[in-house]
Image (cartoon, rainbow, N blue to C red; front, side, top):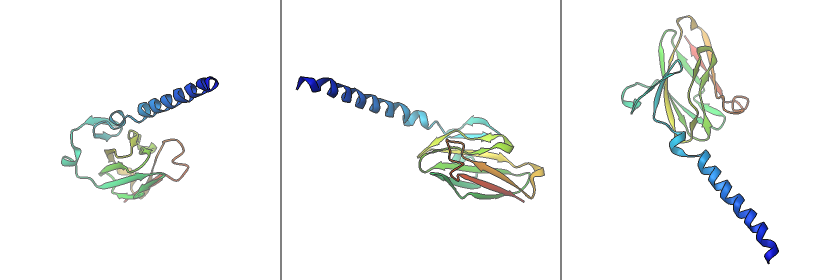
Length: 146
């Protein structure tokens, strides 16, 4: 019996370390800061953005997909988008406009405002998720500008 004690202690230490790591990595309060407004990557704290901004689109972010993935906008306008992480961890990036949201975990959301350039008429603006290999797995979309 005593020859199994070191083995059982090792298993117990691994279980405790695994549980501790889980709680450190998935602490909900740290992973979901308050709602923020992002305008060209500058964030302004707000207590409840749903009362102050009229949202043009709500994008649900699930594993490897945005829904909807095709948006329309008019050149020169502002586009207000509510990003909702339904499952997993995701962000929203537009390289051509230097825009990126924070990484949002399941159950969290963020509202961003995108200024569509005047000279973007008749173009498509690509957005994607930069978390791990999500883009390669198909997590991208377009904004069709009129």
